[in-house]
Every structure is written in C-alpha cells, then in structure tokens.
Amino acid sequence: MPKVAGVRTSSAPRPEPTAPAGPLSRPRPPRPTGSGAPPGLLPALALFAAVRLTGILAVILTNHLRGHPLVGNLAHAWDSRWYLHIATHGYGDLIWISPQGAVQTDWAFFPLYPALIRALTAVLPLTPGQAALLLAWTAAGVAAHGVYLVGHHLYGRGAATTLVALWAALPHAVELTIAYTESLFAALAAWSLYCVLKDRWLWAGTLAALAGLARPSGFAVAAAVCTAAAHEALRRRGRAPARVWAGALLAPLGWTGYVLWVGGRTGDLLGGYFTVQAAWGSRFDFGAGSLRFLKALLLHGGNVVYPAALLTVAVGVLLFTLLCLERAPLALLVFAGVLVLLVVGGSGSFSSKPRFLLPAFPLLIPAARALTRTWWLRRPQALVVYGALVLVSLLCGAYVTAVAHSPL
Image 1 (cartoon, rainbow, N blue to C red):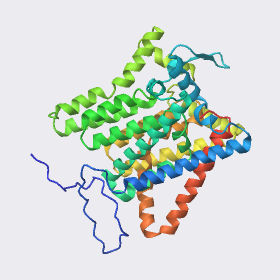
Image 2: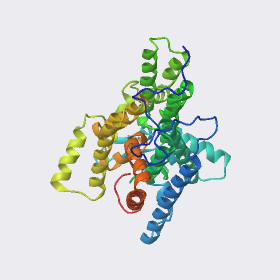
Image 3: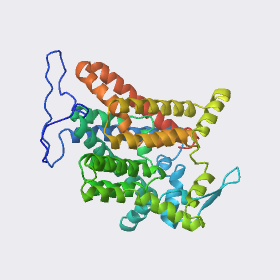
Image 4: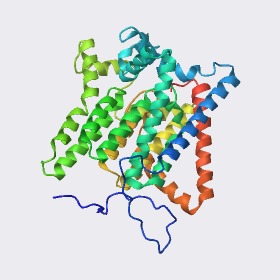
C-alpha cells in the first residue's frame, strides 16, 4: 500500500515551532524537503565552527601562557602518538610496559584513522601530525552536518540548530579538534543514523561498517542499524526489502573484521582482541570499576578532572532517561544507550569517559528542544544559558588539554 504523505502518528517526533507558541497558536505543518541542503544548515555549521575555533585558540593561548609548544598537544597528546606511530610504521612495531607490568600493544587502536592519515600524507606534503589534525577538523564539520540533518529531519530547523550548538559547547568538545578518533567516529555515526531515518539502508550499513573500523565502541552504530532493521522487518511482518537485510549484514563487518584480525595475530581468534584491551585496563565489568572509582573519589578526593568526569557521566545517564521519555527513534536510542552502557559498565581511566560519550549526540535532543522553546519565549535567558555553556566548554577544553595531566 503506498504511503500517504504528511501523516504522522502521535508517537512520532514533530518539528519545533518556528515562533512562540501561545494559547491559540496552531502547529505549522512540516515543510517539504528537497534534495538540497535543508534551510539553516550553513548558519548552524558556522556557529559550530566559530565555537570550536575559539576552543582551539583557547588551547593555543593556554599553551603560550604556560610556555608549551603552541599546537603540539593538539596533535601529539596521549593516544594521538599511538595513531601517528601506526600511520607511520604500521601495526606490531610499538609496545608499552605499564607500571603494573601489563604489555600494552598498538593492536588496541582501530585502523581507519591511521590509515587515512597515511593516505593523506602520501598525496599531500603534510607531516602525520598535520594530516591527523586536518582529518579531525574536517570530520568534525562533517559530523556537525550529520547531526544537523538528524535534528532537522525529526524536529525542524530550530531544534537542529540548537542541537549542533549544544554539541559544539560540550565540556569535552575540544576532543573533536585534537588528533583523536572521536570526530571521525561521530561523523560516520551521525550519517549512518541519518540514513536509517531516511530508509537508505545500504548507506547506513556501509557507514556503520566504517564506524566499526574507527573505534572499539563502533559496534554501537552496528547495533543501532541492526536493531532498526529488525524492527522494520517485524513491522513489515518479515517482508522487508532486500536493502534492509543487506544494510543489517554490512553494519557489523568492520568491527567484527578487525576484532578477528587481532585475534588471528595473537593466536586466540575470538578472545585475543579482548586480551589486548584488558592489558590497557579496558574491559566490561558491569560497573565494578566505576564503583571502585566512586569509592576512591569519595574517600581520597582527586583533582578537578575526576569530579567533572563523574558529573558528566551522571548527566549523560539522566539525558538518556529523558531521551527515552521523548520517544526518540529506535536507532538513536540504541546508539546512545550502548555508548552510555559502555561508559557506566566499563573499566578504564575515568577521566576518559566523557570523551567516550562525545559522539552520543542524541543525548542532547531533550536539552536542544527545551532550549529552542526558551529561545522563542525568553531569548535573553537562552543567550545567557548558551553563553555560560560555551565559556565552560572553552575553559574545560583548555584545562584538560594544556594543563591537566590526566589521560584524555
């Protein structure tokens, strides 16, 4: 049966109003969208670029005040050095013995980002560090584009712009502009989820497979695509088009392929990758590590990074609850839920956990819708709130990048 255009169920998200909603106001119907860019995209991307460029300048200024190289820690901080080494020398060339005696190898780092760095240095006169930053900054812009498209498709221009603005002003958003994989992963995730929402299943599965090659948490995108595909098949009583099944089959190939490759290199096909990660202190322990951290923090305290990380994780859990109450599309719920579950239930350095939540942009949807309504009804208050968020983001980004010695 052909679909009837313009019909929405009561549970489907609706566009935000484009004017203040009064007692007698009537909801405006959604505007038809063409094949071009949706309205408001360029201003949203300009706002994103302005906030993140200011964040980079804040890091450079902090480095100058502390007598550090101006941009060195943007390209060579913590995990960045591992990615650059893999891009230059390949896998299996670098190990590190931790203070606890664990043998940490470069197989813990997924291959897509270093492969792109290597490819870029092969065609452009760039150092690996310069190529890594160029890729990260470009991917951040592509990710913001995808975030806007998801928001615009579901809720309209106002909420989409606010969603991008909030994502740019997260306390840990500076990590979108250093030589890390978060921006690349976020770009692939956002566009894959957008393709799910638009029923472009082959593209959704392909992008999910690439996301699975970018980060260990890349299987969150595959889980979202596969769950949405299963729901679509169930809705159609098993008679879903072949492209739905093809997208679901493609989605987990990247992550699974790399995990099995590492297993083959270690001699333990199914468990080798997880052994490698365990040497880095990274395992899923159902929250035992998080509880140990919380106990130590309460008993002994810690520098500002750790309470801030704990607060960020707690807010992430709260936002996921609100996202569920918003009845967001299933793919967004699964993607954000898996990332939250990994952060809460996984071990590892707690100071890195806010970074792991950074690609989970759907968590910001409830806040974006609320701030959009405030913008139309109380614009000065909305500006004050957003200005405060940007200031916190700039200060936090400069501190964790150029001052603190905690792992990013």
